Length: 160
Ligand code: IDP
Ligand code: MG
Picture 1: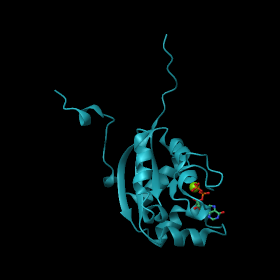
Picture 2: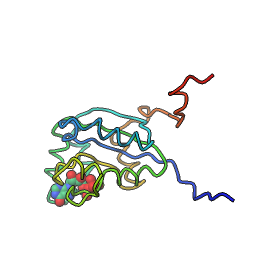
Picture 3: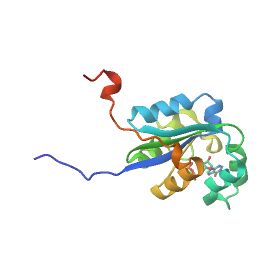
Picture 4: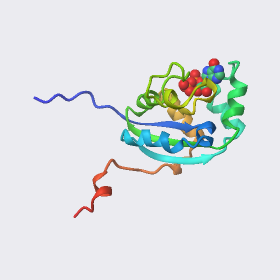
């Protein structure tokens, strides 16, 4: 008998390489870690975020003391927004990213490997399905997503 665990749903999450990641030249490093895990990018853009979208994206933090700094920072330069698809991708990306404070982020996570400070922690990843749906709408129009398959073979060898 073969074990078959519960089928996990294919999800999409929003990843942001924040302005510090773009300025430090870490976008490729971040994307490489996501791609090598087998997740696929279904939308991507380099953009400078307008203030209203930044306030909307971080609305849950609007009453926190750091909200002003957070909005000025995220709008201060170009960021790279990505929609990333795969089984369990929301939780998996949170693990790849590491805890909010780089000092307590797990060794090997992006924040532990490349960041020092909570206000310059390089990357955003949605924290739930509801957040992902809400945030993806802020960054992408429906027609900006491409449909892709996990069909690596035909991209490595010609299929005859
Ligand atoms: P997350 O990015 O790990 O989901 P959140 O708690 O959602 O963390 O906070 C959003 C962002 O706000 C963080 O990534 C970080 O850049 C910033 N932030 C969170 N807490 C603080 C703080 O106490 N001081 C300064 N910035 C903070
Ligand atoms: Mg968050």
